[in-house]
Image (cartoon, rainbow, N blue to C red):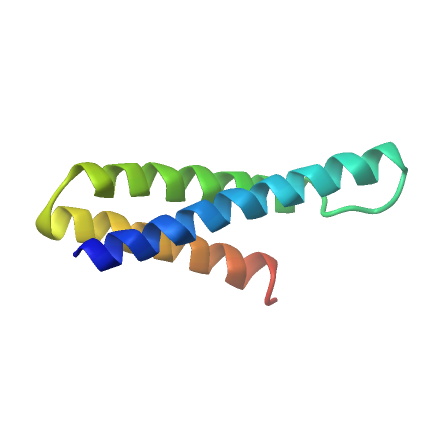
Length: 88
């Protein structure tokens, strides 16, 4: 279980960092009047990041199947974000 929680922690942190990059890109693009990621993409990234980090905190504070479920939420949130905003 420790390995799964560790891997989901890396995924949650990566989702958070990706969100920071997208928000930063949107701010820079708006200042330079250049097309950026847009509000919908920023909203998706913020929602996925909040969900992933909250689920990871939940997973870190629980044991057994409950912790596993929290880790699966992290993977689901990150996968959904990548599928809808990066691969389509």
